[in-house]
Image (cartoon, rainbow, N blue to C red; front, side):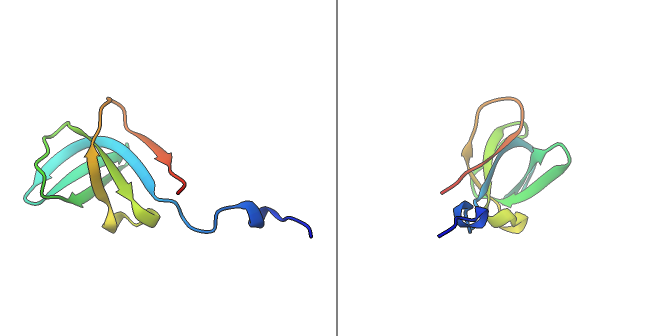
Length: 84
């Protein structure tokens, strides 16, 4: 039985995890810059300060369902793929 590349590639999308600074704070939400050209508005009940680094998970690449998973350290935004 031959093996095709599609047989060994994952079939479901992995969530994207991004680390970036909080750029604006609103009532019940914060804006996080996950890329130099992309800012995501995330609902939260936890108070964050402008400039604080946080980690954001974007399930399935859907920005409207982005969630903050916690604080982070560092100074430069970075993105990685997580395979589960």
